[in-house]
Image 1: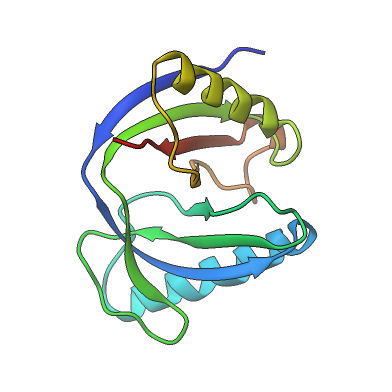
Image 2: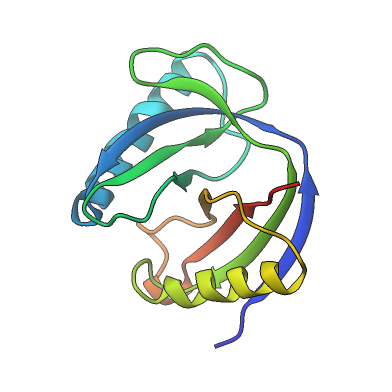
Length: 154
């Protein structure tokens, strides 16, 4: 399996997001509920997301994942309840496009991106982002596209 890995530079991206802890088995429910709440709030504000939903993984403890889930927005917006304004950090990033079902197979893309970054002389910050480029409710699992993004240390 081959993956297209790239280095990119991008500005910081404002987001509205929810920070949560969950086990991997409860992840689909947490993400579904969270994305629904955030979209509803964005609509209440009269705004629209400016990109696909994302999840940031601050650790890889499958029993106690520390995640942030949200949507990019055009400008900093106020938070409400557990929905907070924030940003995806700008700077140099390593990216890898993965096509296929969510789950264990994604580890190969993570490995390819890690090796690519190290080969280029960079070090990841330790946070991993997944941007979900199509809708799993209408897209067959084999065609799901996830952009994996590692912010890099300067």
